[in-house]
Length: 398
Image (cartoon, rainbow, N blue to C red; front, top):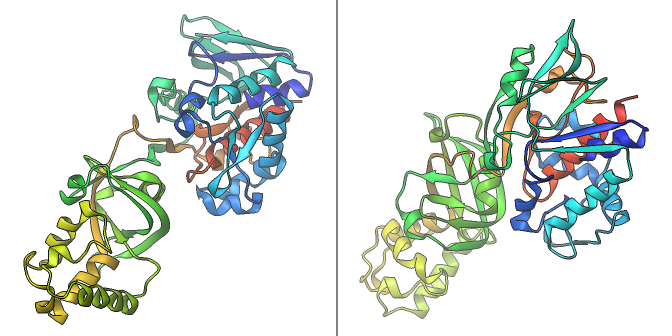
């Protein structure tokens, strides 16, 4: 849709093909139906939130910024608001209004919508794109084609990844698509026993395990959620994007009290133990943990739940502190594409001109959005990348 607006600005006549019965189907479900359109942070801060190939996106993000996208929406009747973490949403909290905003912008151009029309192949002659092939076998010729077919996440919305095979067939290299911003299965059973429990203001660290122990990959602070299969929530989803291969070789380290050093944590526990001096251990953790987590923490500490607090040894107390500050969760695997917010992988960006989004392999062929091998963390960054690359591709067609 953004590519259509940009190409239309240059006076082109556009056919916008959509395999679904309506435009923007994936936008309907983003931000839990509210559509986290973009992020209002300084555009320079975007790059630390982009996981793969951030330098490829400099031209796109600086050519069509978050301010550009917000202005486009508001000019087309979609007032916006900024929430926690600089996340931008429509004032109405309805993703449908964002889609209406895009449609309004497109309707001002010479654009023809073709719904329920699926493109299955490309017409390429002597390394130049000549047109497209539809599902019914019909070929149609065009001066230029912009592909924005998405990755493989939420395939029910139409982004099934099938077009990657077409591009491989015409000589493009594809970085194997994997689920990103996706929940994780855990090897341990205890996270599943905490199903439904959300933890706020905790730190979760992704570690790549090796024979010497492990290497820290990324550490984030915020909110996480325990589920019937393992872990989810913003922290787990974001860290999943940093798992390059073999998820079982990674673990998560949970710090339940990131505001306290080890020494401060020990002082805090000692104060609580003095307060509950004659209580059973299992009844002495209520000031430190959600009630649902207390039996789990007691079990992980290895301390007898009915041991009197005044009988707990220094060694036992040290083990408890480790549980609070360094609780290991081993990853058994990632959930599949049906639960992934986005896709990691796609068209190799080395084969795409970063200033125009045109293929370096095939003239007159352009790419936009999630089908490129770029992805970012949650917070509105991925939709902004889609809009910026779409605008750059549409604007590049002369």
